[in-house]
Image (tube, rainbow, N blue to C red; front, side, top):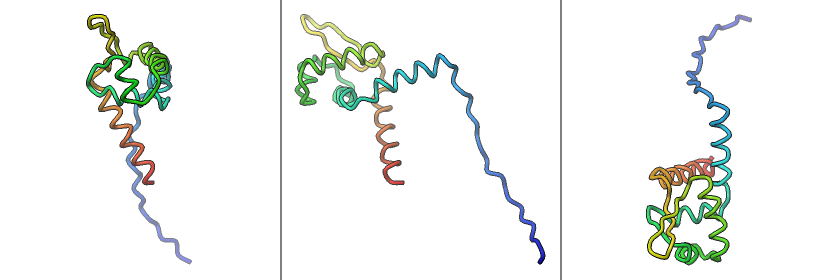
Length: 115
């Protein structure tokens, strides 16, 4: 029996640089805040607009105390920022990158569902 020698091209692998420990901890906390379905609904309802708690509650169908609780978590993680307008406090996405990030996560979800 004759062995046939085959030349196999090694797969090209691009290695990334690991994040620093403090970065991984901060990113994990951010992901934890994004890991709640209610908070994702609130963030997606904000879009690029700023809204008061009552309007967020109305657009999501959630109770106002529930929205306030989750907004506090999102604020503490730096994902939303409060903005006083007269006697009302409006909540806005803290970064312009938030909505594109949510869309990218949605695309990732669609890719994993198709697999």
